[in-house]
Length: 185
Image (cartoon, rainbow, N blue to C red; front, side, top):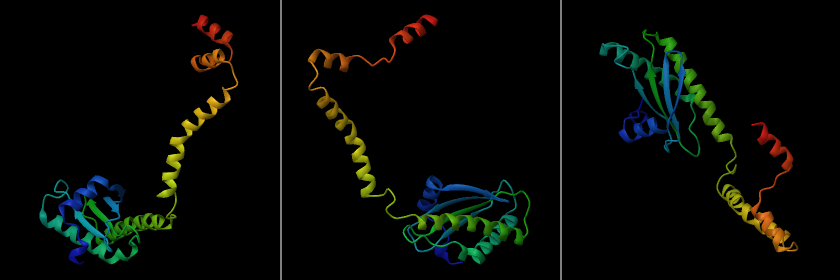
């Protein structure tokens, strides 16, 4: 695996933790963030000291996970607009899994992420984005003003005393029902 494919910069890791999404599979937790603005995917592997006290075992598992990723990295495409995906693999099993099991788990993770990346590519570029979204927001803001104008136009032919009553008093459909319900309580 090339060095550029490893996620090691502190700001990128903090961005991954802050805005990444988490998932679970057999023996793994993972955090991913689609859109690292680079033309390739990056990973970081973590095996907690809490699970394995010996560094030899932790390093063995890290090597297995990296190799499983290297063999299956072609499954995860790069998003055309946003770039690659940053992934954090966290080993969460208390047992040392064999290499084939790790390969299957990593493959499942990559296939799930690939489905999400392709879904992002498949969405139309103009679906409520940019000018369309701004136009809808402007229309929503203007709607109450237009309603007020229509109401004032409708009230022009009505005498002033009736206009004041209409504006000040809330409408009640059946005043007798409201009096009866107040007496019941």
